[in-house]
Length: 97
Image 1: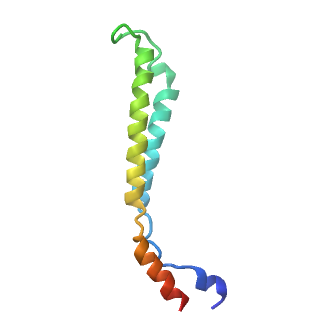
Image 2: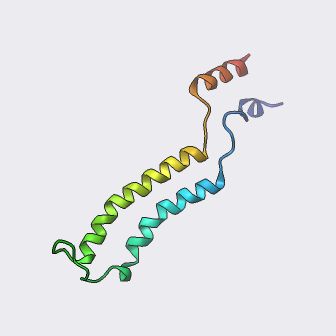
């Protein structure tokens, strides 16, 4: 066994859940698609508190984009679980022996 094979810790983390990572990608792509598809919201009606639809739709996406980004972040955390730091340190210490 060469030095490269010894340095790789295959038990460092479980494999990622690819389906959940795809969901995270969709959550990140959703605001981009919604705002780049201008024909869907390029109109005046309906107005909200005197603001045309074009303005309040984009402002609404400020909050929706933050929510989608947070949901994608939490989804990635679930999809790519990690071992706690204390067990990582113990595994490194054991590997050095």
